[in-house]
Image (cartoon, rainbow, N blue to C red; front, side, top):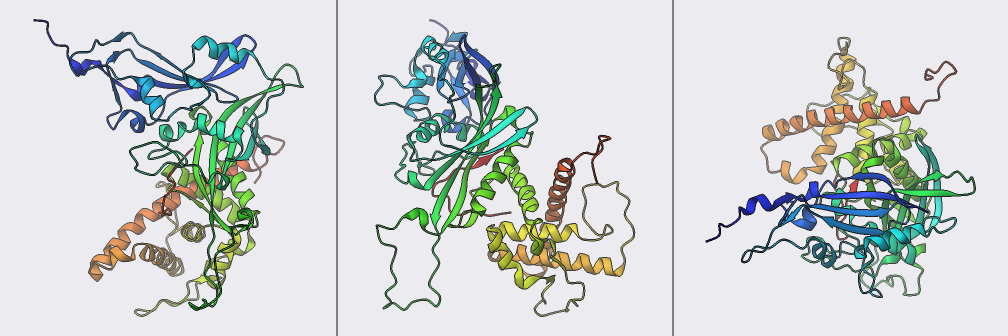
Length: 485
């Protein structure tokens, strides 16, 4: 009787086996630009992130670096023969049937699954003066070339096509990320994009100049998607049930209605991370919608920690350009009562909501920024810092008073956000819990402010001698997708 194989040795890590490659098209074929691995593969291959039935498995998803046409190449050293109910997983079928790669109903086989020779030959047929889909939105210079941001509506067939090609990057690099039009936590990847007119896609490219100054090539760097919600504000004063207020008529142009704009997906590919490209993309998007008359507020859907850091630094840069925000300070003339309601602790308190609406930043994000700004103004003797070796003077009574004021400002925000949980605690336990959370907030703010100072210092122009001159909650994720930079 033949000995049964050890099935465990036929499992491979899907994170290690799966790779993504950017390939630059040329007259001679394809030239490698970069190769990298995904951060997550569990949305495709299961929670254990393993593929069964192979040794030396290589799943290469290659993209033409300009139009992001994909090609899937699968190879392996050895494939297990089926034994009873145990048989190798069909990797191509998993990717195709799960709608992870684009389908073209007019073709017998989806473009990602054509022969490798067809993929290479089509890449030799260069289109003269090719440009990304949409319209040119913004440009900036990076450390390794010029970068361009292109913008278009998901209604545009060319934008819809490239989105279908790159959408797999969302679950591969954003934990919990899902596709546009996909129902969260659904067992199927079927998508409904009947609201395509509400989606805007921003594509980030590096533009590489060729030997011919009249020509250039494009390399895809990352992208972001934006969704518009109708901004409903109840009439003031509220109408009575018998009033004549009603929803806008069907012939109303939705693009002209007030809206809340939400950044839904944000991906910068690993080879281009850590160079400031994500911050430039976010800033360009933010500034665009800040000037957009219909947008009343710009929010971010369920950001991860890395994007939160990027957003905090960029928002602080923006807000500190507003004199009304920059002039906010703690009111040191306030006397803190032993009991009863607190007085207003900030000079300019009455203007806070007006400043927030002018900035178009969501309330929770804005008040966190206020908190960080005020903390940065504390005297060195009491200001939390990440530099544990820093020499600080002994605090004066005035310094301690400012510290106490800031702590109360922070505790007010924390209490409002965690009211339900804290209300169930005894007063002593509640005070202890708030103090514990506050210590974490102080360290987090100190870390963000240190990042902000580095960014500001790096952005200062250089003198001729080469030296430089001197928890946030997300909305309901009905169209769930997340961000990664």
